[in-house]
Structure formats: C-alpha cells, structure tokens
Length: 210
Image (cartoon, rainbow, N blue to C red; front, top):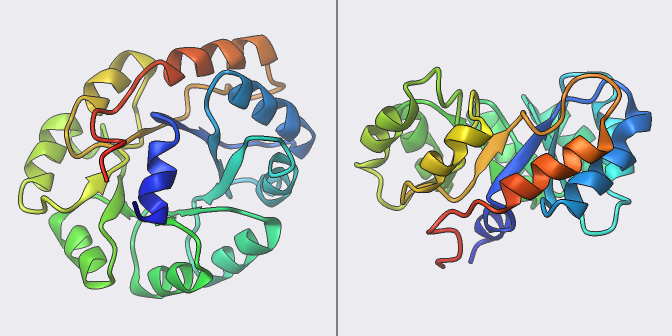
C-alpha cells in the first residue's frame, strides 16, 4: 500500500483537533490513543496548533499530522513541528508540490470533479472530501467518485458518530474525519477516551485492501 493509504487504514476515524491551549495536547492524544484512535490531525487554525503537534508527537502510539495546511509555508512549519502527514481543505498546485516534496503522506481536500482531476494530474489519488455534508453528503460523493474508480476518500465536515458508519460503508471511503471527539475547552479525558472507543469500533470495508 502507498504511505497515504496506510495512513488512512490505521483508524476508521481521524480525529480533527483544533486546540487552543497546547498544554492540553499530550492528555488529549493519550486519551485518543488509549481509546483506539492513533491517527490524529491537529489543525493550524489556532496559534497553539504547531506546538500541539510537537507535544502530541511525543505520545507513544500517536501518528500526528497537520491539518488546515494552506500553502508551502504551512508545509514547512508542519514538517519542522514533527508532523507525520499533511491535510489541506483544498487543492492548489503550489501546495501540492510542496507537500509532495516534503515526502509526507498528503491528503488534499476536494469537492468537485475538477479538484480530483487536478489531483490525479499531480499523481494523487487519495483525497479528503470536504466539507462532506455541506457539499452534498453521501449522495454527492457517490456521484463524484463514479468517474474516478482509482480514487479513495476521507469524508470530513459535519460527520458525527451516528452518521460515520454510513459513510464508512461506502466502497471508496477508507476513513472519515471527525471533530466530535474532542470538545472545545479543557479536555474531559474520560469522555474523549469513551468517544474514541466508540469510533474505533467502526470499520471501513475497503481500508485493508491494497
């Protein structure tokens, strides 16, 4: 399997984490890993994002990446912070080239057929379908994926524990991104671990197919 496919096959749900205080990072990562979710996306939406990546990367078993990566500067900063993969909300050629050059697994956001075609031209075939629910939900992804049987997806945006299983049942879907696992504010460690256990019990049928 390719590195990005391996990444997408580790856990059925990738927690999407927006952390406002880096001092919470290790405890959050430990709770998620203890609950069975090892792949953690830390967004760069707050000033604490890069430091949270650094701290979470020290947690045994955690595979920590940077999300909301928008340009080559963000890629460089993420690599410097120790990110093990790169996720973006969209796909531009300069960003894709920088991410590919970094050597890290790259999961770019797409919402249209043109986005997917741009990615394929750049040698990419694994994508984040974003924003999943706002972009038309499962019906939209079914139609969007049909002309691109080689493509695989991680839907993200508006997905909940209640809906994640329906997304994961779709053949082109390897995993989903979820922001419901960690609430804003000081972390409730027991609740995070419980949510992680529930999410880890889900499974994408195609995730372990090479």
